[in-house]
View 1: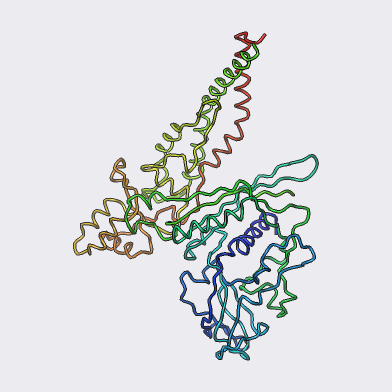
View 2: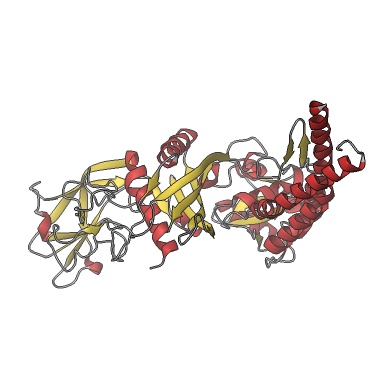
Length: 286
Length: 216
């Protein structure tokens, strides 16, 4: 993994786990449905039955995978080697509403699934989920209902800043915000802006990739059910600075065609109706 | 005497820098032209599309040429157009959409086809109202043959329109396209050159002073 990708992933994690924390929602006692097509002779897969709009399992959303208090950056605590998977954000019950021990199942945080054996029979679930969809490519915007935030890191400039070695790395960062109302857009702008202005985030080493594996489970959990041994590494890249957000700026985007006739139902689509853009320079020293 | 020299120097250099900036405006316009061609003219677009960037090229160049770049009071400001300050009114509304990016897939519904639909017999008034309220380029200064509305390709109106017109509508080529930043490269061009323009202006201003023998 090279530097640009690390920067992109580090900023993604900062925005998802720290900045957008005020937008985490909770659902209680939702039903779990057994999915025969995804199950095998030894593994039973259950899916959350939800009628929520927007869906908690749209692209860029998903269930919350860190406990409250364990989602901060931890960049200044070198003795802490990593962050464990959540233990109180998701609770699975059997049909008598007895809590099922979390060592007996795995969670697919992206698609809202519980993977277990036939020894347990999950029936209901409480869970926290990310209300704001955060995606890192424009083409994925339409894959989710608003609110959606698109993270775009591009345009690199590298230059010397002192005698001898080292360089200053500047990248252009844009967050495109697509909300479902003016109020929601304004809330998102304020929260994101305040968490970028005069702030920075760590540049993670990410030796094993990001928090979730390709199948939506916490990284390493498939091979080791002990949560204390499968930690998300908070190691940062050595010999480099944090990523600093400079020249943060915001503006609303009103597409001319969407407004040109001044009548109801003239918007191009829900996603184009309440838009904004936050831009900044992502600066680091290496 | 000292103040007189300072004032004369300031005035002379101020005038020389203004003149220098003015001389380089054609370079800025040329850079803007090249950027437009590089970013937009190369895109493959259906020949019948009404949103081809070629249609808006002349208007764009006209407005970029007439943009108020230089503001001179006690100080000189060289302002480069951006999404906020550039005039995207009229037919350039489509260019505004391209620079901001459009989410979703759309079809182009030409104004003359829209008129056919609105006159169609048996079409419910509510549906006609929805057609009338479609967003589009319909300003009076644009020829009728170039006016069009955008129709969400997944909406029921898309099927109704194609059924009445008995033809496939053309896909809006900038559907789901990320923002195309026309001005960031222009700003980079000016940033690359502005120091040399200012130095040149200062040199010319001081040379002018010497020629007028204000300095001893």
